[in-house]
Amino acid sequence: MRLIHDAQEMQSEVLALKKLGKRIAFVPTMGFLHEGHASLLREGRKLGDILVLSIFVNPTQFAANEDLGNYPRNLAGDMTLAEACGTDLLFAPTAADMYPAGFQTTVSLGSLTEPLCGASRPGHFNGVAVVVTKLFGIVQPDVALFGKKDFQQLAVIRQMTRDLNLPVEIIGMPIVREPDGLAMSSRNSYLSPVERQQALCLYQAIQKVRELFSQGESSVERLLAEARRQIESVPSAVIDYLELRDGTTLTPVGLAGKGTLFALAVKIGSTRLIDNTLLGDEP
Ligand code: PAF
Image (spheres, rainbow, N blue to C red):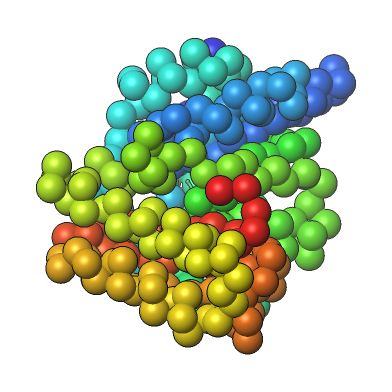
C-alpha cells in the first residue's frame, strides 16, 4: 500500500492507472477505521482493480461548536487495517492542500439536506458535498462505497452524483453493528463504559419500531411514541430527532410502509449518535 499526501500526485497516479484500463474503487473516510469501514474496503476490493482509501477529517462539514478538534485520529492503526483489507493507495491530504487560500467553491443541495441531520447540523451536507466532489475529482473513481449508517449522507451523495452527471457508481453498504446491536461509529470511542451501555437504547428503539411494524402497526405517532419510550428509559439520553420518512425522498410519511426510513439521532452524554433502519427491509 502506498501512502500519498499530495492531491496532484494522487490524481496523476490514478490517471496513469486508468490509462492502463484499471478500474478504481474508492472508499472515502475520516479515518479511525473500524469494522464498518473494513466492510466497505473488502467490498471495494472485489469491485475494482485498484482500491483507494481516503482519510481526511473534513473541516467544512463540522460546525464551530462540533467535535472537529477532538475527532479521533490514528493513522498508524488505520494503515494496518487498510493494508489488511487490500488497499492499494491511501490518500491522506492536509486541510491546507484540500482548501488552499482563496478556495471559494460551494456545493449545496436542496430539500434532501433540510430534514434530519441537516436540520440539526446546518451546513453539514454542503461540507460533505464539496469534499466528496473534490475527492471524486482527485481519485477519479469508477465506483465509490459509503455506509448506510449515514443514510442521509448516502442519499445526498447519490443525488449529487446524478444531478452533476459524475461518472461514478455509488454503492451503499449495510450498517455494521457490534454484537449487542450498537452501530459501529468512530464516535463510539467517545463513550465511557456506562455511556456505551446507555447507547444501546438507539438499537432498542429500532428493534421496537421494527417489531411493531412487523405486527401491522403503521401509525407514525404510535411507532414514534414507542421509540421515544425506549430512548427515554435512559435518563441521560437526549433526543435530537426521531423520525419516520420516505426512504427515497426523505419527505414525511402519513403512514409507515415497506421502505419507510426510521432514523434517529440521540445524544448520550456529549456524544451525538445516529442510527436508522428501513422498515420491512433486512435488519
Ligand atoms: O462519512 C464520512 O466519513 C464523511 O462524511 C465523508 C463521506 C468521508 C466526507 O468527509
